[in-house]
Structures are given as structure tokens and as C-alpha cells.
Image 1: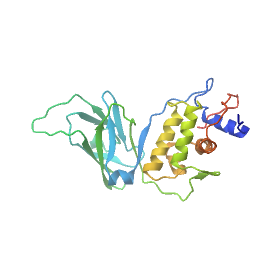
Image 2: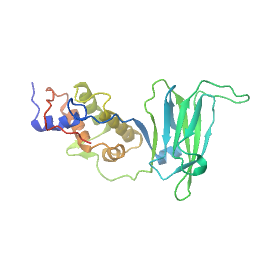
Image 3: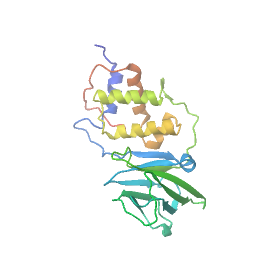
Image 4: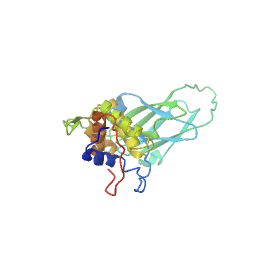
Length: 245
């Protein structure tokens, strides 16, 4: 049986600090679909809604406020905002599924669209289109619109690891399979958000890590797990474990 280096055992233990018994556990964070503003204004963003659940579309990370909303088919979904549009302070839309209604003369569609017009601090208007898709098990609790992301020239490599989405995904699968972290752990949700950004927004690992608020140390450990393959020894809890956040 191959023995892992002590440094690898300790550093991998950092990954599981969030779920180790006897240690402080952080509250579960929600998984949001994070979308770059440039993409959101040039193509339709899919938003999944489910019965009995509220789904949010938030512009809180930008300098924009919502000035106008148009829901093409209001027979199965209703919306509200965190402030009246007339106040100029609305930044989040909340969608809820309702029992189907019939409106004389109105048409319906399996996938309807939501048009949102915003205005920023410089009085510049933007128009967003969201496709509303009904789902029994949505992947995200909502959508977060981010400002246009300045592309860094930094390499996605951390240390000697080339942190590609596939490598990070492999490391995450190993960590879950070996019980280093649980599938419902906050760190897992953040890593999945990061992978979504890297694949859909073409971000580097560093850019995506900054966007979702995850330590590069975690990504480095996932990359190390992927490089070494499935580890053969369990991680022992010690009093020196600490969380990575």
C-alpha cells in the first residue's frame, strides 16, 4: 500500500476541515449560477424554476438597478422585486411557479422568456433576456449577474499543477469518493460554481476562484489528488486541522 507524503496528508486535510466532526461547520451556502454581464446581454440565460421554490435573478454585484420587467407568459410564473421599480433601488427579481391560469387571448409556451431592462450609475441601459425553464430539480437556486470580468494574464497553473476544469473535476470526484468531503458540503457547491465559470465564461482557475470566493489552496489540493490518482490512506483528524475559508 503506497503511503502518501505527510505534506499531502496535512494539506488534503485542509480540504475536509469544513466537515470534520468536532470542528466548526460553516453554514450551507447556496449554489448560484454566476453569469458574466457581457454574456448575459448578448445571449439568453437559462433560469430553472420549480414548484414550491423561489428563484432569484440578482444584479446586486453590479451597479445596475432594474427599471423594467416583461414576462412573456404569466400563466405559470409570477415575479416580485426587492423594491418597487419606481424607487430606482430594485436589484433582485424573485420568480415563483403558480398553478396554470388562463388569460383570454393570451398565448403560452413551455419555455417562456423574461426581459429585464436595467440602468447603471452612468445612466446606461442594458437589456437582458432569460429563458424560464420548469424543472423538478433545478441545479441552482438563482442567477447572479457579475460585472464584465477583466481577463487576467495569469496562468491557470498553481505550483506545478495545470488546473484545468477536467483536472479539478477529477480531484473533486476523488475527494467525495474517499470521504474527504461530502457531496452537500459548501466547498463542493463552490467548486461546481467555479467549474461552471471556467467552462462557460472561459475564466482561468484564479479568476473563477476569486469570483466564487474559494481558496486556490483547495484547488491545488484537488489538482494534486487528480495527479496522484486515488489515494490509498484515509485522512486522520488532528487538532491542527483548520478550514480553508
